Length: 225
Image 1 (tube, rainbow, N blue to C red):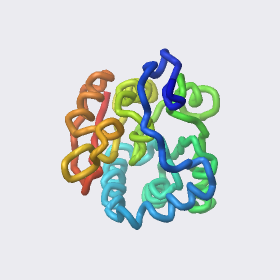
Image 2: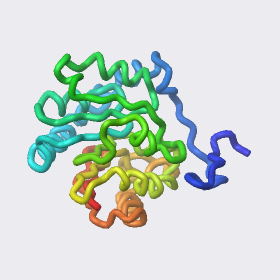
Image 3: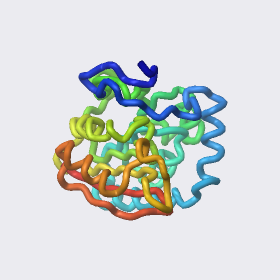
Image 4: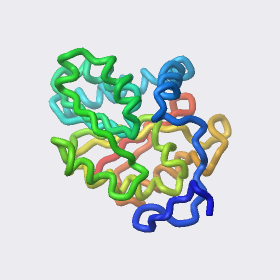
């Protein structure tokens, strides 16, 4: 059996061939390389960051924000800097990424930030919040450019179902990722079309989901329970 196949039927389907990652983001050198290149490749990411910012200022200016797959902290820095009353939880499987993120924040911003190490590809990953986090549900949840790190689109529905347990009734859930489209990504095992994204939300029981905009191949979705 392919070593990239998950074998735990409670969370992932046996027999799904995952798309291997070309980089190990837990490796400090790989993490730093990714961080140094990501905004050069897609500087328009900050347009999306500003969209999240305005939504938070309007709907949850003193809320608890969770970022899944938080990476090197570019979004955390942007939101903490401009939303002085939010509390932030950064969830990532890479301690190297957490260290890069911490280095960007001021002392006061760090006081409002909690770093949680965990892997959303593992079964029952949301239990990390009950065991190690001061917060179990959030006002805003963001997953920016990380959904494809599930390494197969098949897993998106189960992932959204798990995220739903971290949502309150009025929680805003934002997902931004590369999309499968003629002018975007071409791997339809790793990336989803807009329609496939919306279907995954609906199948997961998150019926109030909408496509916001395609930012040059990065599609943004907004959902509520």
